[in-house]
Structures are given as structure tokens and as C-alpha cells.
Length: 603
Image (cartoon, rainbow, N blue to C red; front, side, top):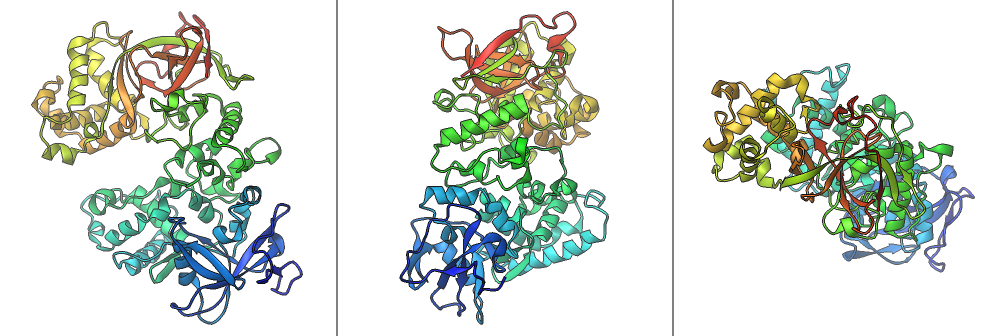
């Protein structure tokens, strides 16, 4: 449709800048007037129907400090915009002709909550219908933009010659590819704050042709993602050698099209997976922890194909999260509860403890009960019973209180030291692992494990029972070698001989692989001993006396704390657990199946 279409109406200088756009799919676009780099920025805003809009490009950028604003001309009057948007306008402005754009900060009246809510509901379509999405990353601080662009183009060509990235060879640690100085420039690019923001995942995921504008260069965002996927799968040592940190939220969720499952590594994922995976990203409004992802087809994978949550900025954060929590627990049952993370304050706040606080601190990096590829089946052997939300937004669940915590050790960053750190640090560090081993070896009586299995039980617990995301018990020989190699670096008080292992076992293992497996388990968690002699991992706020429960239908155990001594069935949900020896349904043997069924009310 040409710019003279009757569906397009310009706003003159004598009219209000914003008429409320509250119905249908009527949007604002802006025309960025041509100019040289130093010329003042001048734009015109006009109204059009989305389906009949002229060709336009959408901007993806970081808003930056809302208090740092720069004046521009908009429809002949002064409008103050953020400094970052001003820089983006200067970067994309053409010298010889106007450019039609969509930019959220200008094209939506951000102060009108009803209009903002209305537009967010179909914002994904605005990006998907754009001719291009321009990812404005600003200046390149190290002057490496051209190096990045050459890497992206070179590896896109190389990757295109193979059937798939998984079929490509994995580089050895001494491969000369690692010596390429351009990797440092890529590391600088990937540290750009744009990669930490919530909204950008949708903006590029739905784009027909997302283009990265970095310094003076422009290149394909899709080809950048291909390079990043290749790094993760074929060149993992780049993290250590060049500090190339690839955010998996970008690589795993790069495609938001209707056909996204065809390209996805995990095509069975649901909206809950997306929310949980993205919780480390940032946004200024906590409600956008949900709204920023409603453009994904998974947000409509519910009865009637309606949005799971309708954007409404007049609602409180509590209302938004609670509404979503009810929808998700009805859809996915106990998987939702594995997304719950608390600190000592949030556990007792007004929000029901079973509802994930998507804007809260992210303590763990690995949810045991959400990722369906894990082997866990803690309630195997009993009939599944779905949780029920009552009229007071309490969650009623059926299960058994299997055990209680008797002692706990909360991990710190020191206890997650890499092998290189261990080699250079004093053995006086890492006292937590030594204390855990000492208690396991000398203080605990009546183990739930045979004496000869105690070391394996402790070691498997530290890794959440996993060996490179697979069941570690299926790779015990390599697991033991890796464990011995790592523990031998902790000093003479907890060396491999103290663990009852031969020194040569340590020489055969990979301490870095054990460290990676262990990080998945212990970050944000505590090591626990139970009254029945089990070892486990539980949320960092766990305390002695807290219950370890198994709900009928859950894949992992959960920790509960009594909410009110006068109401014995009322509990606060602390979070999910790993308990070694209970993850395959062992709690429900033939002899004990169905015994001691209880109703727990999570408030």
C-alpha cells in the first residue's frame, strides 16, 4: 500500500501527538527524515492499519536510562526520547530519503496503560510483518565490529556446506581455530547489554530478516546465531580460551515462527519452559517477564488458541503472576512447582508460595523437574493425582511426607571453584565440600545406602545424579574417574586416597567435566542429610526440620515448611529437591505403595 493510502493519517503540529489506539490492529509508524550524522533528528508519526501499512522496519534496541533524554522534532514539536533511541535513529537514518520505522517507545503511548496493554497483545505481529528488524547494538567498544562481521560470514558459509551442525566435528582443545584473534571481538559483542534484555528474544525471533547494526557494520542475526550454535556444539573451549559466552536462551529460542518445532532442539517444550529459561533476562516492568514472550506460538497453545494471559498493565504484578500460575498448574501440574525459587523473605510474602515469582532472584541454573529430558520419576509406582487450586488460591496436593532434613550445608561460589582455580588456590578454601565429606564419612549413622556405596551416593548427589545431562549411574566408571580427578585437587585432607580411591583413578578422569556436572546441581542449593540417612540437594533456604515430600505425579521431591502450627496441613513450598535413592520411585515399593497418603495445602 502506498504512502497515500486512505489507511494512513499523518498527525499535524496542531493536533495532539497521541490519539488513543484501543481497538483493532491500528498502529503508529514513524517517518525518519533524511539527514547527515550531525543534523537534528526529525520524525513524523502517522496512523495506519497493520495489515495495510506501507513497508516498514522495526527497531530492536535497549531503552537505557529513562531519565537521560534527548529532544527531537516530532510532527513539528519537541519530543524527548531516550539517548539510546536517539543513537539508534542516527545510526539508521538515510542521507537521501526518509525511512519508515516502528519503535515501541514512540509508536505506543507508554503512559496510557490501556493502549499499551492493547498493543502488547499483538506486538509480535508488528515485528513479524516488518520488512526488517534492525538490531541496534551501538558502537563497538574495541573496534572489532569488522572482525565479528567477517567471522559471521565466514562460518555461515562453512556451516552451509554440512548437513547440520550436530554432524560437524568437535574441535580438539589444541585446534589452531582457537588462536584466531577475532574471537575476542565476538566475546565483546556478546557482552553487549542487548543480549540480557527480555523483549529482544521476541523481536528477533519473529523477524523475517533481523539485521545486526554494530559499529559501522551490518550482518545477519540469523547467521550470528548459526555461529553461536556451532560454538556451543563444536568449539566449547572458546568460553575458557576467549571468554566467548553464548546465551542459550538466544540459540535455543531463535525461531518464533509457526514452524519453530522443525528447527528446535527440544520440540516438545511448552510455554513454561520458555518462561523458566528466560528468567535470567532483564526488563524494567516485572509484568513484562510474562508479556515479553506472548508472541511465541506456545503462548497460544491452550484451549481456543487464545493467549494464556491477556496483557493488562492495570493489573498488579501479583495478579498477573497468580493468574498465570493458575493457568500453568492446570495445564502442566507439578512441573510448574519446579520453577519456584524463594529467599527467606519471599517465602512469607502475600503471593502464594507455589506461584513462581518470575521477577525474583534466580538462584539455580538448572530446574530438575522442568526439563523433561532428565530421567527423574520420583513418584513412579503410584497413581498420579493432579494438584487443585481452591477458592483461596491455595494449592491442594496429594502425596507423602517421606522424610525430614536433619542437617544442611549451603553452597557458596567458593565451593564451585573450577579445576584451574583449585590448582592455584590454597587448600584452606572449599571447606564446605570437606565438611560434607567429613559428616558423610564419620558422623552419619544408619545410612540409607550400603557402606560401600556412600562415596558414590555423595558424589552423585553433588551432580544431581547427572553425567553430561544423562543418568550418571549409566556411566559410573567415567563418573568415578572424573570425581577422583576433581576431589584430588581439593588438598590432602580430602584427596583421592582419603576417599578410598586409587591415585591412578584420578589421573584418568576429567576434573572439568565433573565441575560442569556439579555446577548444574549445586548452584543455588544446599546439600542436605535427612533423618532416614539420605543425601540430597534442596533450595538454599532449607532448614533442619523441613519436610521432604513426594507428590503423586511429580518427577522430583519437594521441600515444605509448616506455615502455621495451628493448622498442621498448611505448608509453604520451599522448592524442588534431588534425593539420592528416591528419584526412580524407590519410595513407592510394592510394600509401601499407597501407604500414608496425605493432603498438603500449599499457601
